[in-house]
Length: 360
Image (cartoon, rainbow, N blue to C red):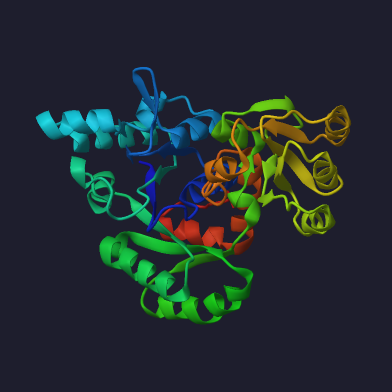
């Protein structure tokens, strides 16, 4: 029988998906047969008559899992099927999740189960996090995103209160560099005295909140006229200053960036190309002059023509960074290396009941 490991977060955008994928990669590397399940999803993309959970799709493709995506994410709710559920009731969702869990575990040592983004999800279909964990007989890892030290303590203790003995431990993620010492030397020992095993304390890494050039273009519904690399990750977004005397210094301070700049400013566009720039986002319905296009092609920098003015372009991309999804292999590699460095995996395997034997 496989071991079920349910990974939950206490709020949105804490790195829960990153933890799931990194755990799967590391366990697979250590010789375990690993499966995946996302019991309940409320953030699906509709494709015709189908409802696709993008996290499940990414994991299926990344790990080449044989199960149909409908089995990896068996209950996917949208506004349409929520309406139907509210008016006429629904299926036996508990039985669906139980069967999906059994299928995911066939021939596997461990199944990583991507849980809710908070402790409030799933009640509408009788699948609150604690109910789901009980149905699947799962052990729990809580991912706590750092906002403040007080919030980290409260969120972690909430996880312990809700999950009780099923809680294997907590991973504290996204800790700013200037708070790492405080969290490691004060917060972590305090939580462990309260009965919580802190599995890892992970620093904030901007690359994990980055977005691809393709994602930027999709958000703008723009036109790419110089491609660079569509999968390149952009860590920062800069709105160009209007004054040429300030633009170059501004661009030098920010690396691995996309620059929003007016189409009537080739001088500022060239300044951006002289620094660490992944993409030019040109507004004002103007194409760049030939010299800019040639330089961008030479430097392998993408040029995206935004159909909007500068303010609308900024609004379209606002909150996109740091709220991006974990669907790029480069992010997977970076986060897996970070988690492997900071977390004691042999001890973790013992805690969840995996027989390490000679595998580690």
